[in-house]
Length: 333
Image: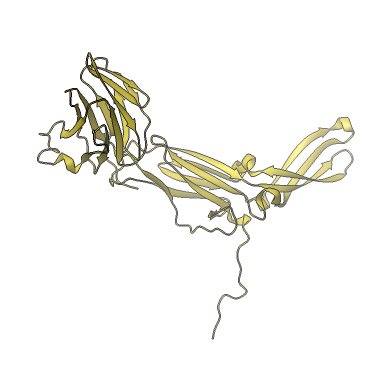
């Protein structure tokens, strides 16, 4: 997994001199009684932005976030806007003698300077970079950029070769009655992922359906009655595959394969003169109306909690797949 830093904060915070307001996606600051500048954030593949009210009230509101090294800012005003970037504490051990433009750049997208792209080029650790937007009329808005090592990509690392011959697209075949542990790899363009990005949500979904043969035995009459039932894999997926994150790794537990899966149900047929009935179910076939001739499969989704980036692993149990066989293992000429 990518190396992590102790305290990295990939956010941009907005502050203003005077009265400021925060809303979802909008930061407005009044710098003069007759002047209002609005800075609107249009997020496009950027590091996260958090808008903060000024020091007068100290409140903060989290805004929508995207993933990537670029953020787009828009200043709404009738006058031209210029932008400047500087270290907040240029004499710090990290910032001293370092060019701030090697870490954050602001590139105008419009001739008026109303729209700019803020690009993070590399980690600047725990430092704060100050971005100043200045209107021709003199009003200013201050935006502070900090770095958290926000991951841009997530992947489940396996050493099992995928196949695409028996399920809906590529899948990973796992043995039944086994436990597998896979690394979860978080990466970004900076090569550093913050420690706070280490919690995940895991969901397991089932796709397809299958048909089971039923055999119902009446304890009163001693008769056995055949039947069939169609089961949705989505409803029964936990009978076959479960998954969770344990110590930062994806743990997948497989149980029995569908083809050897059996279960029983007991019902009271006394009122019908049948006594206690027990129905035992065994595998018949895949439900071709849903699966075609393909086996059912489980889709394991892993989502990083803070950023919401997600990846998936499509799993099928090897006992449910008919292996490809060749009549000879070698040939000699």
